Image (cartoon, rainbow, N blue to C red; front, side, top):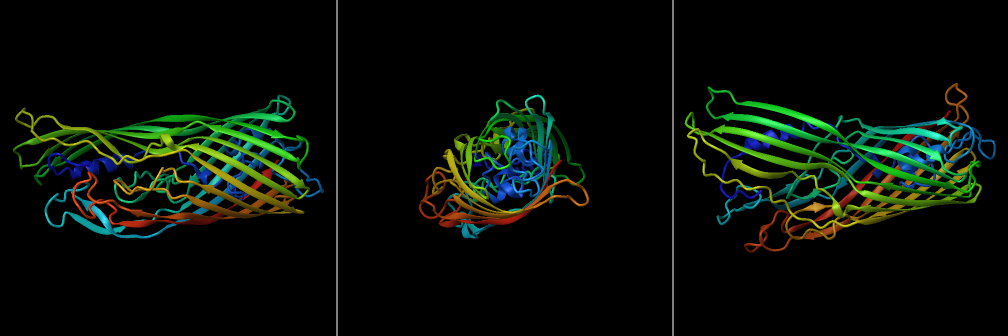
Length: 494
C-alpha cells in the first residue's frame, strides 16, 4: 500500500489480524497430494480406478462399484475394482508432507513504496532474508461410501474428510510484496469436507455428483484507540459465516462390471470453482493528541482465503496382464481466474474530527501487484503390480506453474513447476483383527521437486522510478525447493 499522505495506522493492522484469525475453516484441498495412500502412490491418478472409501472425492461415480470379498486367485478382497459383494467401504489414513524451499537472502524487503521509508533520502530501502519456512501438512483422512439401494441402480452415498492435526485451521494471506509461495502457505492447513452420491446408469457406466464445501465470512470491527494512558482503548468484533458450496460431477466406465480385475476402465470428473472469501468492515477512531481530537476513519478489506479452480480430469487404466495395470490421467485446471489470498483494502477514508470538520488526511487504497495467471495441464502416469496379496505402485506427474511468467517486475508471487514422484506398497488381508472383514493396508512415499527459477528484478522501484536495485526482492534470488513425506491408510470392505 502506498500512502498519499503519511499517517501512522498500525492499529489497523492489529484489527485486521484479529478479524482474520477469527475466520472459520475455509476449504482446503488435500487432494493435491492424493486422498489415501493408494491414490497418493499413483501420483493422484485415481479418477478411473480405485474405488475405496475416498471415491466420493476421486470420482463419485465409482461409489456404485461394489467390492468383492475374494480376488481372482482366492486372495483377500481387492478394494479397487467393481464386483458384486460388499456395500460399505471405509478408509482411514494419515498423511505427512514437509516443504523445504530454497533460502532467499540479502534481498530488498522494504522500500518507500511498500513501507514508510523516505523516497529520496539515503537508506530508502532495507535488505534482509525472507522467511521460507512453511508449515508441514499433517492430518488424518476419512472416507466412507455405502450402497444404500443395490436394487435401485446401485444408489450409493459417500463422504470424504480431512482434518489437520497441528491446528483446527490456519488463515494466512501471506506476503503481498515479499517473495511468497502463494499456494503453499495455508492451502492444506484447514479441514476439508465432501459429500457425494452415485448410481449405475447402464451395465458399464455409472454417474456421480458431489458437493465441495467452503465458506464466506463477513467481519465487522469497531475500535477506539487512546494515546492517553488514563483512558481505555476499546474494540468490538462481530462476524457471520455462510456456507459456500461448489458441485462436481463424475462418470465411470468398466469393461467388465462383475470382474474384480476389468481389462479397461475410464473416468471423468468435472469440478466447478470455489472461492472462500473474507470481508472485513472496520470503523475506527484514534485520539492522537491527548484529549484534543478524535480522528475517525473506516475501510473495507477483501480477501480470498482459499481458491479452488475449475478442473477437468480424464483418465483410464488398462490391465495388460492379470497382475499389471497401467494408469494414464490428465487434469486441466483453470487458474486464469485465480483469486489471490492477498488482502485488498478498499475505500479507506477519514470522516470527521471532534470539531465536526473534515480532517484533511487522505489514505490510499491497496495497490496489490498485478500477476498474469494461466490454465495448466497436469499429465499423470502410474503403474500397479499385484504379487499375490501384495501390491507395488509407482506414479509420476508434472505440474506447471499457474503464473504465466516469473515476476521480474513488481511483486514476488512464486509457484515453480514441479515433478511429482510417488511410490507405494499395499497388503491385503482376509481378516481385520478378529473380524471376518477383508482389509487393505497401504503405504506411500512422495517426493515433489520444484524446478529452480532464477528471479532477476528490473531496475527502479515498483513504479519504475529511480535507478538501481530498489524493488522488493531486488537484486534477485532463486526460487525452488522440494516437498516430501508419505502416509498410510487402512481400507475395509463390509
